[in-house]
Image (cartoon, rainbow, N blue to C red; front, side, top):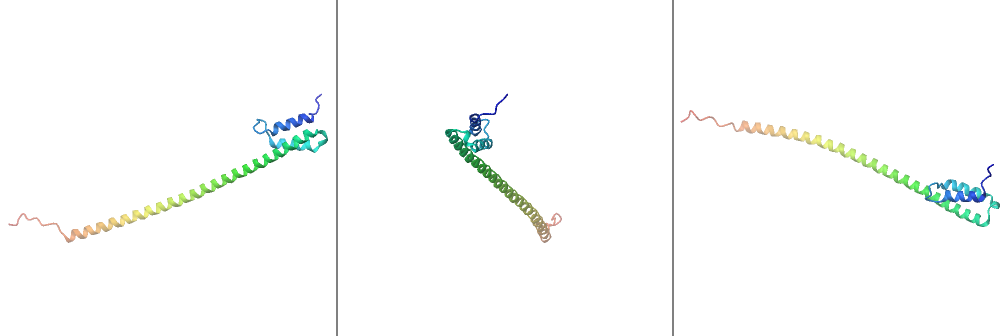
Length: 137
């Protein structure tokens, strides 16, 4: 027949759960275990109560830091996403502007080519090629 875990075993278990860097660390479970132990102080020796209280305060602080770290990471990810989105919009607008300018340049080049062609035809009519002078003395 198995007996219920002793108060000391539960305190040791909570200590392992609260230990940062330990493979089985779970600060939420550690808080729950420590809170349950401290809810029945008559089962703990004064030194065990003090240890549980210190551990609980440490776990609570760590959980606050974990939550703050998560919030900051989420904020940073959101800022990065917004910056990327804004950069994409600027890039798209600049690409559209470049395409518009390229079309305008092509149109201006066509007009310039047409003007050049008109000038050549006017120049050719104004200066006819010299007549062949073979038959003249």
